[in-house]
Amino acid sequence: MFRNLVKKMVSKLLGRPLFLDSTQLRTILGQNAILASRAGKSNFKNLWDAEVKIFSQWGEDGILDYLCDFLDLSKPRVLELGAGDFSECNSRYLAINRNASVFAVDAREDLELGIVNCGLLWKNEIRSLNTWITPKNINSILNQATDFLKQIDLISIDIDGMDYWIASKIDFTNVQIVVVEYNAIFGSKQAVTIPFSENFSRFNAHHSGLYYGASLLAWVRLFDTFSMQFIGTNRVGNNAFFVKSEKAKNLDIRIPDVSDLSNYVDWRCREGRDLEGKLTYNELEINKQIIGNLTVENIESGELIKVSEVF
Image 1 (tube, rainbow, N blue to C red):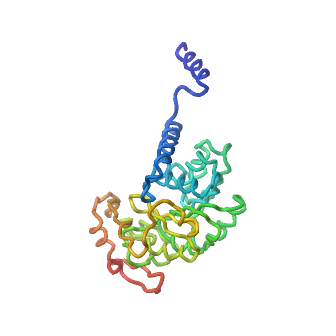
Image 2 (cartoon, one colour):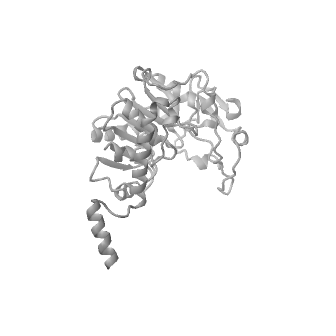
């Protein structure tokens, strides 16, 4: 009892709890890391130099904070397609640090519970939509997101499947930042995506889980049509970032040469699975062979080719 009394007294004097839970601690450490990153941004050469991982899967938190700072998006309005259960996604830190409004979409049934448990609902405008995202329903999702957010500043797309076909139905004209997952195994030379499939499921399509999404060049070509410039990726090489071309020219970092994207498909993650669903830890060249006989579609010619032919 005496110990608890002391804790309460010290907490009252400090104006905050004596002990922080893991989320609070992660947030505080992350905010300090973001501030340190900002202090050194004059030394950034590539976009991935802005990486800081807090709640994102890799280092997208730092990159998105850097881009919001650059574009003066103090309180961005975010649509996240593929938010998981909101514990590891691209919008959570923006909601914490920039009071972002978020419309989070995922087929996971625990998405709403994840948002409730994160403690942000009373601080932010956050809404979840539990649905399978498809090219057919994306316009309905966009309408709901726009009704809630009023405008959309940032869109994050990570669906592990029909990402390109879904994005091709979206009007990005007034969007300031887009981050999309790409499949580095599809290489850098051709603009390809998996062919359209009504009920695509990543691990049902191939046991390895390596057959999904679109190549980086496919995304570059799509966003060219909206005057959005490819400005770089995270360091691991699976999430690409785009901003309006007229803004990109003012960034103090190296803008990638889209005629040679090889530096952004140096994929060293070994996430392929065997028939039993266990990680194989195979390297890139072996993974290319594993899905080499599967088909992809060239978005520019409409031609169907084998994965082995894209390199």
